[in-house]
Amino acid sequence: STDYTIEADVQGTEKKEKLPDAGLVANRYTFYLDGKTDEKGNREVRLVSWEALPRINVGAPFTWKSGTWYRMKLSVSVGEKDAVVRCKVWEKGKEEPANWTIEFTDPLPNRNGSAGLY
Image (tube, rainbow, N blue to C red; front, side, top):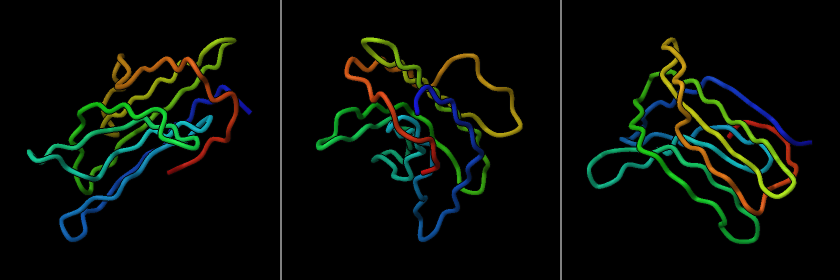
């Protein structure tokens, strides 16, 4: 299977001052809310793909909060020579942003893989 667009609502609850990771999977690409914080207390969303070694690891700032629902969307379009992976996240109930949070062209595309939740 290939060329998925998957959407889901996710929420993380802080436990012992930490948030979990949560996200989506399509074509062996994972787009997730990263529960870790940097030294300034900010969080990110990440797009990753792993084969035998980490191959793609792209982040964008997105400081999400405990107990708040977010809508996530991951779209993968596989072409002959590459794949375009688009990801976005926004607070549930608010208008979907026009721009993608992360947009990545993979020159060595994952040509198949199931959709799922992370």
